[in-house]
Structures are given as structure tokens and as C-alpha cells.
Length: 163
Image (cartoon, rainbow, N blue to C red):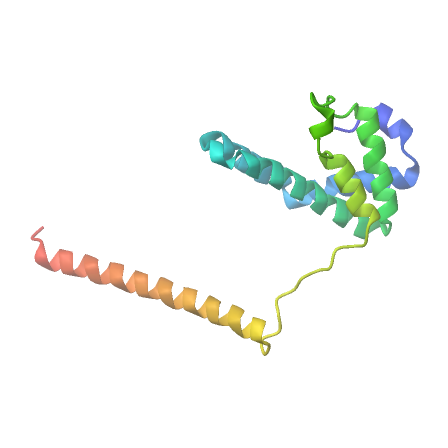
């Protein structure tokens, strides 16, 4: 949530970074993704760690897109740090010696480091590319075979069972 106190503390470039970050969340509909994961985590307790991982990944996604949009990873890092300080952050851990860095320091550290490498599909005529295409083709053939088996079973049951 963006407050007037937060906006007063941010420089103009940091405000642009903050708004770019929030626009990414809106454009990518991260709220729906997080709601879906939260519902899944409540339905199945084994999926609770998934909610934390997806929330962190959505924030990092918005961080990187905002940095790309405004052209400065350092400005986005400063905006995130300032926003965390103004909002008060999380409560102190009960056992500080066992505490791992929270998501905000990890996000800031990631932004201050080198930009992540964008991975694209491998070219077709490399060993990895051929393996990826073979796996995709095998999956498609398997799906078609399963559909054929299901249709055949329905036809056999229909012919064998008087309706």
C-alpha cells in the first residue's frame, strides 16, 4: 500500500520506480495468482511453502520489470528499501541467531547484483533443443494416444451395453 508518508520520503526517480513496480503487479495480475496459491495452500497444508515462494517470485518479477522500465536497478533497490523502512517491516525474530534474511534484503541484494540472464528456448539444432522438442512431441503423442484409448473404450462400452 502506498501512503502519503511513503511518497514524501521517496525521491522523484524512486517514486517512478515504485509506481512502475506496482503497474507490473497490476498488468501481470499477480493478485489473482497470489489468491489462487493462497487458496491452494489453505486447502492443502503441504502447499504452504509454495505461497511464500510464489509471493517472493512475484515481487522479484515486478522488481526486475520496474528496473528495466526505468533503467536503474539501484533506484528500484533504494525505493524498495525506503518503502520497507517507512512501512515498519516485519517484527523481530524470536531467535535472531537463527533468522535468515527476509525477503526485502534479498530483493535489494538481488537488484544491487548483476541483472539476471534471460533464458529463452534453446535453438532447435542443439542437443538440448532436440531433447526439448522430442519431449514436447512425446508428450503430444502420449496425449493423443490417451484420447484415442478413451474414445475406443467409450465406443466398446456403448456397443456392448444396451441403452
